[in-house]
Length: 318
Length: 318
Image 1 (cartoon, rainbow over the protein chains, first blue to last red):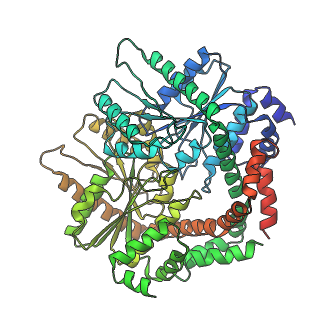
Image 2 (tube, helix red, strand yellow):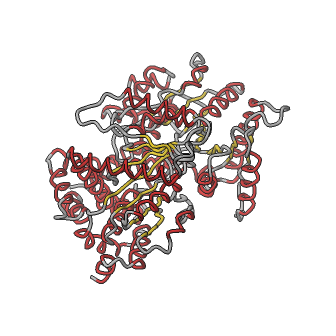
Image 3 (tube, chains in turn yellow, blue):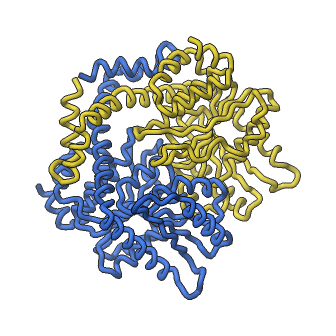
């Protein structure tokens, strides 16, 4: 198939078009994705997450520059929040990364999604497949915020960088408890700001309280910024890359890489089942006008959502 | 039924237990929720969203105090991020709100969720039903972050407050474009901070570019904090409440309240269909070991997720 051949040959236009079709849920995209599948699974995938404003794009940009020095080819997916009304991506391709636009070995795409059935995780999984088929060595996935949705996205990654920043208020501090469990490497950004040292201390204290199971990976903490004049932003990013390499080596040595690959496959299957089972039922109900009738009944308290859904299940499930 | 009677009588213990059962997906909870349903739909629901660290809890706390002055009974759901590993709520019942703990007319619960099938939105919908059946006049839903998941949650609300805070970096500024469309009222918190005025100006500029459709509601912007000494935090919160009341009046007068109630019913049906159709299929596949076999195939690139999911759909769907 032409599309598959072109994408495997690294054709940027064809890849971009397929990613747009994935976003737009064009049915024809599915057959291309199926055919691409055997050519996927060879890239190393790094997730970058953290609160809005933590400076994830700056770090992603730094990582691109550093990994290019090591001659790696790179794909970047910047996940965009989708407006529930306009259905369009908001951030667009991140502006800061434009300096890599001329570099053929770097392919940056933003990704949004339409529809409500948890389609973002699926779109991310499929877009990763496109970048993998293009033969990218490393794929960076940058999320927008922190939330369940972001955790779902991060499940597509092999190594996860959690970006923290001083002075974001106590909620973020408390949330570290949740972030700790998805973080493989912590990056404290804007480390020259007041409060960075305290954040570092708190994070260390929290990591110290973790009860290390056998083969426990203690997430290293990298300070990013001009804290010590001896070490520049670039120097710190190089350290971050080194920590990711160490984490990759740990995953290999401990056998945990297989676990992550398993988890990733499970997520992809989960997403595909939603699309194959729930969506056709919803579409049928929508087209027949039944969904509207159900909504009316619920609104008027004539029936509760569970009882209605159970009736539907009886009719549609064997 | 005993549980239903107790909850409709305002019994805190029974309500708390049912909310915990909803979180834990105890099957028995479902029948209670079904029976509660006719007693729901009479509360006014206010969503409070914004980035972590924006001070949503402080504003929620202020709203409780202000609404109590107006003699309203209040239910609060603080949505907690769930750790994907421990499966537990992280923040716990928000500490700041503890000052209302002695007030019988205020019922505060944090809500987390287990499981991955987008269960949070459903749990929120059901927990709202519990608070409605208890007879609360106003229900406040406070989200943790900003993301698709939060937008799903916010769809359960009639009025939405988006909390912004100065100095959160340019990503948040950009995201306002997405927030604009879910915001009914903006609150700029920590308005005494540097940058608050600029944020206000930017927000106003953005609101000015919106093309007002017929019956357009222009979201008012309320500054929270000690910016002008003449007006205290409490005074500002009173202003915020007034703006929400105006929004409610607008929804009534314009007929848009019916639209929101419709949307809410549609969300509840959508969540219930997921639970009734997708979950049993997933459970069957999991118990038979087939899900593990599928994962193995995907991992080894012997089959792609879509083709596997389509086979499953053929077997399970009539």
